[in-house]
Length: 192
Image (cartoon, rainbow, N blue to C red):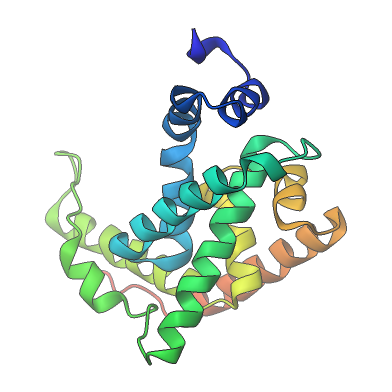
């Protein structure tokens, strides 16, 4: 029955003490929130921590949800804030979350059988370059790129989530894509 309810109805049930209703919210949004956090932090462990903190914060603040934005926008905003908090903590500990070397070793890229090893290597290198370029963007640009290009959120959803004017979101995406294009043009992938 809970699966048929709208997010806002689940929030109401959760506020009135229905733990299963909040569990359904988590099931619905956990993957998308993880993808957002991973896109912003580039480390799986940090992304998992951010997701956990996002849902803990959401649960603690259910009574404060006013319904002015969609539940998804509210959760995305909490997740972005959690990612920013993790990044701030990392800076104070002098850790570099933008270093892809460690996490690149942990990733396995599976290629379709019809691709040659040279083609697979080239695509893997290209993917690594794109990830590094995205991670090198300033936070305010990176979060818009991740939400639009990887989360496939609409401009309006991003605007609601980040509490920014629509024109600012579009401007940031344009600027981010322009910077990414310049960065990627400077580092071509060598063909084997």
